[in-house]
Length: 159
Length: 159
Image (cartoon, rainbow over all chains, first blue to last red; front, side, top):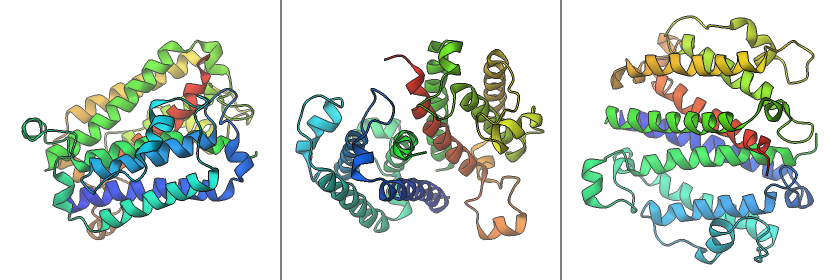
């Protein structure tokens, strides 16, 4: 069953990332700079937010160090329009693609059983009691998180 | 592993439904009648759409007949603002709650192994080749679908 479950979760992840990339490819930089709804987050902020959340999956899943921890302050700890300087949209597009490519490489090297190992923010003691706090659970919740913001970013397209 | 997997998927489902209910509880009918972003779907339409999608999970998961198939035309086959008559918001709120309550009752009666059985829109022959087309996969994809529209409906709240 492990291989079936990981296939389902990975299929969901990859299709949600693919939908997002397809959307990002159609959006001009001017469209991305706009707000998803009046007074709400800009596409720029959401792209940086999503890239930072995915970048943090690297240490959480035990793959290595986060590539751009200096961006957590602006995209995770601060809301949009905080006045904190954001990288250029081209830099954010590259950050997003590079991060997902890196995750993809690691995902492809994992056995189904490895997805059921604990992620790095749960202790061995807690994991013994709560075995659902594993790497696959991180993948499920981050897929949901991406779907939520994807649903907002579609509003950046012209009607 | 089956019990761990179903717990993860169900936890994700229940928390996404709970977030949506918490949002719906705070939204007045006037807020729900508004569009999530200018020119986009209304909260009314999205509530009906989500309820109809969840109602269709009942036959898809082999639990019985859909309660309100007559609503598929307005909420699944037609876009918002089609001119087709929608039920009142109170009726839609009840439809949403009743449908999720019914799903909850069925979910609680299922063994982990039953989640790995085929759903009713895949044939036995195809399922033999593609065992990931099971009931748990329906749950995962509908959780993502709900998260996507939840992310849009939060814009109905006043800032």
